[in-house]
Image (cartoon, rainbow, N blue to C red; front, side, top):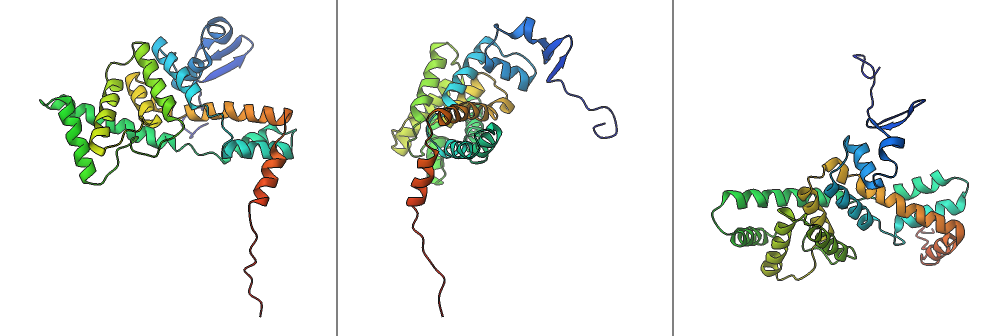
Amino acid sequence: MADGSGPAKTSVGLAAEGGVFARGYDLAEDLIGKISFGSYFYLLVCGELPSLEQGKIVNALLVALGDPSLNSSHQAARIAYSSHPASLQLAMASGILAWHPKLNVEVESCAEFLRRMKKELYESDHSASHIIKERLKAMKEERGGVPGLGQDPRPTDPLAARLLAYAEEEKLAHTYVPLARQVHVEFGRVFDDRREIGFAFAMAALQLELDLPTQLTRYLPWLAEAGTMLAHIAEEHQRPIAPVLMSGGVRAVRFENRIEKD
């Protein structure tokens, strides 16, 4: 009983003698060999299969979100694995606890900003360029930042540019991607800033363009991070570097005795 009013229910999946089912689809008959893992994840989270276009963007986002660098979470996972190689779950848990996807908050802020801009464009008789420029000037005078734009250059910015270009190549850029491009151009003029478009801004534009559910895009970074974390754990098993990470960290810290003696 869930709350005393009826039986607890789930519609995500079922494993029974008749087969394995996900959201009503038979994995063996309907899904294996027919959809990508990105589309399968979409199905599991959202309860329905994505369109062909949505599936393409979800898969592109997963690749872009899969940071393979030796970041803090990957270091934590490798160190935990080296201490207990028999416990893969310990390594994964350690890495996940060391990771915080700030991107999710940024994407939601960027999406809200793009929605407001689209609404202003729809309700005004002025040109899009004029409206965007005036909005950005007002934000500059208020000394407020523009979500997703103006931060220090990040290694992911080239990935953002590629994601938007991919959407354009696939003829998926109709409303929000062109709007994001135009906002970026006007931002450069108003703020005298020529940096590339930010990853969160690009991801928000794609989310809105393809009508991707927020509940899905909120989880995509976690899925991508799990994949790259497993790659680092696999390499740690084959070619350990955790001892170097630990000893290097200790050597970099200077001990200071602050206890005052009488």
